[in-house]
Length: 446
Image 1 (cartoon, rainbow, N blue to C red):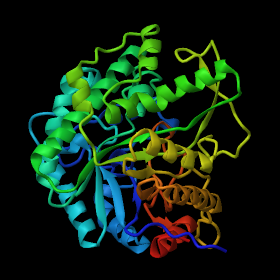
Image 2 (cartoon, rainbow, N blue to C red; image 1 turned 90 degrees about the horizontal axis):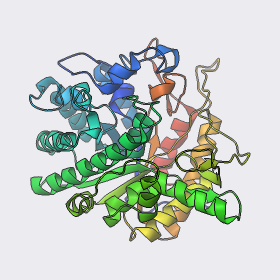
Image 3 (spheres, helix red, strand yellow; image 1 turned 60 degrees about the vertical axis):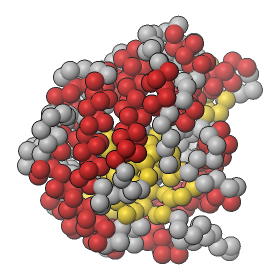
Image 4 (cartoon, rainbow, N blue to C red; image 1 turned 180 degrees about the vertical axis):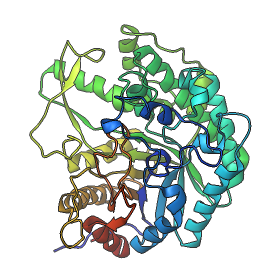
């Protein structure tokens, strides 16, 4: 059997997000977030679950860092809770909030683990949603101010920053489908939100450069390779629109300084498209040090005139699915990495999320034998290695997730972790996939 060995200095990590694990939703001066509000409204989350306690990481972070150390993790991707740090989203800061993240990032460093910090993973202060949230351009400026405060307070502990996690989800799941907070259902609003999110990203990158902080900064996008379901021109055009919707609408302004013209033309016939000034586009295009990619699945697209606004729909291929109902297609990761490398000037890439939801159970020996997750990661790691061998500048890989957690609208019904969490007792159990991942990290391959 041949051995797969990744490049020297390749970073192996795991990822989490503040609202999904921290709990302590109203402790120590923390303000209300849109997910605190959204999850407490009946019908929004399966079984009425909330992130009030989640994995209680706010109180158990020392135990969790020990687990990260045991797993041999090189780098831990976490996110900051904006309302924990600035309760109203602007104005007065909360010392107890920022001190928590100082303790956490300092402890990670002491244990030889590099913190990778996401500034925004969806928990907008509710006070800012009350003035329109991300549809209000002023919020982009408040985000920049929040980020500047974080750079100043945490810059000694953190050398890798991510401005936003998955702005597509914030824009469209939160403001068009309404299945995520804040639960708005208006396509024009979603387009405006997408622009203001990217504007806040660019403003924050510029602020990072001006702060003279050491390290690197980038953005994380959830990207999906889209294939035509047939050779017909109509299906090919539908797949191109889907690609514009999921991928190019965010990639192109950040990395090329322009929105895709075909999508502007298409959306203009369907909704109100925001005004994109040249100044805005130059700010959004502020040079980043890396691109974070979250990859879970691929799509096969055909034309469907009944599907507004894209007139396109996904076709199932018969592949195995995860517990989320997402088709498993490891070669799609290879295709995606090569495409981004080719289309965006060989930019440095981190896979900032990849993993699967499984129906995990503790067996009679007290173990979690999640072979399906192990197999999923194994096959995706092979595709990442293939991409490296094809000269893609792939610098690291973060498995989603470090531990089971609050999975947004799915509540606690879906488990993504390589560490099992018993939500009643808060006991943590490293799963079979976690023990295997430890060996992958130790050997920088398998």
